[in-house]
Amino acid sequence: MLSSSIYDLAVETARSSPSKKKVGALLLNKNKVVTTATNLETKSHPLQAFFANRAGLPEKIYLHAEISALVRCKEECDTIVVARVNNQGKLRSSRPCPICQLAIKEAEIANIHYTTDDGFLYEYKT
Image 1 (spheres, helix red, strand yellow):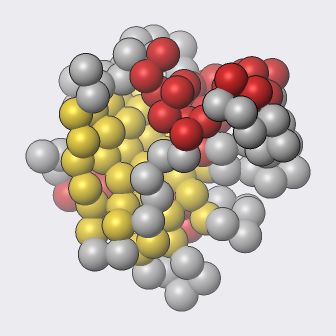
Image 2: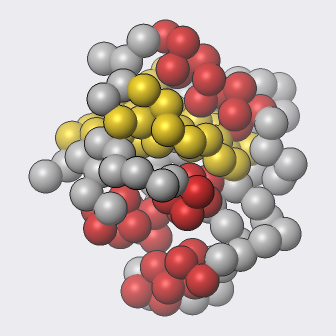
């Protein structure tokens, strides 16, 4: 498990998103935050388009928080934490979509934490 301060930072990052769907992502290396990012409905990136096409969802080119974090990251990471909140600030499911799952897998990030309606859930991918 990660410290509650990491989860709190993920939720605060999500709250800071300018998008209607408020999602934030943190990338960590050995439990230290390397970068944070939010989703941006008004922007895209070639990496987002690349993985959207590979996942068979070429229309999903707005920048997802997970891919935005990967773009910003300048070092290897072993963990991603994704949070989503609604307009009332309550947690919502933020399980990475097929596009982001593909990007996370190719970045060799094995530890995935994401929000559900009831808190955070952890998955380990090999």
